[in-house]
Image (cartoon, rainbow over all chains, first blue to last red; front, top):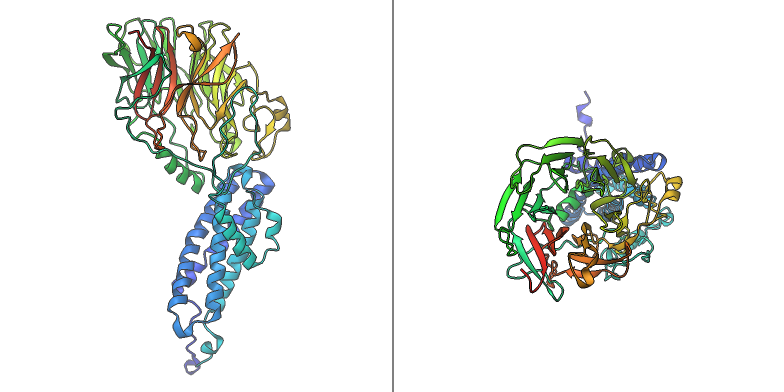
Length: 146
Length: 443
C-alpha cells in the first residue's frame, strides 16, 4: 500500500450538508417528471405526486439553505465568493419552489402550465446549487495547500 | 394574477429574483374588497381570477352572549333549544313537534396533497368544537306558549343524519351512508326501535357528506341530494360516480334513479306549495374568485345536467377540468336564481302562506357563510320572493347578525323550516342553537 502518498484533502462539504443537498434536485426533478406525466395523461394523481415532491424538496431545501447561511456567516477567512453565489442560488430556488408549491395547490389543471414551467426553472436552480455545492466552496488554493 | 410560463425559459437569475419578490408582494394584494355578490336570474359573471393563494377569511367563532340574530320589524326571534350537538336540518311534524337532525360526517377523506392538510386545519377554525350528536332530538311546545319545554332524544347512534322527511306514518332519515326509516305515530317522542335501512347511499370519501332530502308531493317518492367528492374533480372523476346529483328514490322499495345531475352540492330541497315543483339550493365551486361561482336556488328539471364539473352557470367552461367534455357542456342548463357566490346556502323552505305580508310567498334560504372570500358573505337567512311559482325580485334579509361587526361569527345558519303555525325555524350549527322567528304580538 502506498501509504506515504496519502494527501489530506479538505472535504468539499460536511457529510450532513452533502446528504441534505442530495435531496432537492431529485425531488424537484421528480415533480417535473410528474408534471410532464400529468400534462400528457390528465391523471390527477400525478399532480398530487408533484405537490408532495415539491413539499419534500422545500423541507430539505430549507435545511440546506439554513446550513449555507450559517456557513457563510461563520466561515471567516475561508469564505469565498462561491459561498455567496451558492447561498443566493439556494435562496432563489426556495423562492421559486415556494411559488411552485402554491401553484400546485390550485385544483386540477389550474396548476398548469405554470406549474410545469416553474418545475423546470426550480429543477435547474437545484442543479446549479448542487453543482456549486459539490464542486466545493473553499478556494482552490486551499485544496492544494498540502 | 397569472404566471406567464413563456417567460420562464429565458429568465435570468437576478430577473427571476426580482420577479419572485414582485410575485410575493402581490400574494396578498389579490384580496381587496370585491364587489358584493350578484343575485337573481341573470348574475354578471366576472372572468375567473385567483391569486397564488385563494382568498380566505375564516370568521373566528364567538358567543352570542345576550345578543340574538336581528329580524325584520314585526318579528321576534327566540332560542328554543340551546346546547344542541351540531343541529343541521329540522322537520316540523304534524302535531307541531320539531325534529332536529344533529351530527357531522365526512372527515374521512384522505389528504391527497399538502394543501388538503393545511386547508382542512384552517377551515376547522370556523366551526364548532362540540362533539356531533349523530342523533335526532324532538322539541315540543307543551302549551303553545312558544317555549319548547319538552326535549327528548328521538333516535340515537345514527351516522351523520341530515335530510328528514315524513310520509304518512313513516319517518325517513338520510344518514351520510344510507336512507333509513322509523315508524312514527303522532305524539311519539322516542323511536320505538332501531331504524330499518331502505337503501345505501353513495358514501365513498364523502367530501360533501350531507344527504339532503325531501318527500315528493305524491307521497311515494323521495329526493336525495348527493354532493360531489371534490371541488372540481381534483380527486379524479372515478370517485365522482353517483355524486353531484339528485336521486329519486321509491320510499317503499328503495329503488332509485338519477333524477338530475351536475349539481355540485345540493344541500336542501323544498316542494313549492302551489306548483308541486321540486326546488333545491346548491353550493357551487370555489377558487375562481370572489364573485364566482354563484350558489343557486333552482327548480330541478328531471334528467337535466347542471354543469358540474365541466361548466358553471350553464355553459361557462371550467378549464381546470381535464379532459374537457364539450358534449356535456353543450347539454348544461342554467339554474333559475343566483343566491351569491360563496354564501353557502344550506337550507331552504317555502313560505306556504303561514307568514303574512312580504314573506307570504317565497323561499327562505339559510346561508352558512363563506370561507373563499376576503370580505365574508352569507351568515344570514334571506327570503327570495316568488310570484306565480317563480322567483320575483331581490333577496330580502330575514335573519342577520350571525356575523358581528367585529368580524366574529356568533352563529352559522343551516336548515330553515317554515312552521305552519306561522314561524320560521333556523338551525345554527356554530352556536348549537335552534332559533324560532315569529310575528310579534302573538304567542
